[in-house]
Image (cartoon, rainbow, N blue to C red):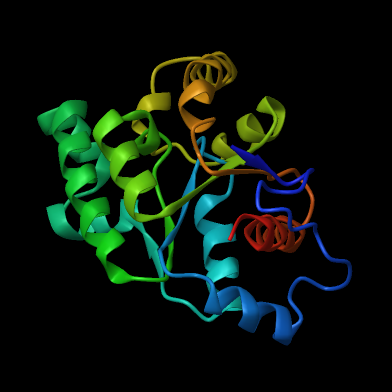
Length: 201
């Protein structure tokens, strides 16, 4: 996995200056032939950062969870309640496979998507998976604002998030790139993603 703190295997080093400079964005887009797929824990900011990244790159944005809701005609909590997690994961894989056919774009996935072997294989084969990571305190603070996350219901949020983060990190670590999404401005995370892509592509 490439890391934003070091040069990539192709020898490119992170240039100085503004990663959102028009010439750098144009050069990056010219080398981008697959979707950028954001993976990582719930609450890490995949959807918000994904929209900002897509706007900077002038690419289409898709939220996989929103696409699942649209396809199923029901909220994700209802899918879990009525059909179970296995049914949801099967639908999630099919929706992500469809989104990956769209060419260069930015896709935000649900927290459990990259943990599923078939879904992760699809993403690695057809996209550029980027693991957005954050410390547990930041994740707990963010997810605590949303009572509709099915995997957080009926338990201690901090305990659940801490356990899930530990269980899922080995799967997320198989992404091509890792970028930290801290409590600072989302634009700083977007810049880190752009710099990492410059090294990777």
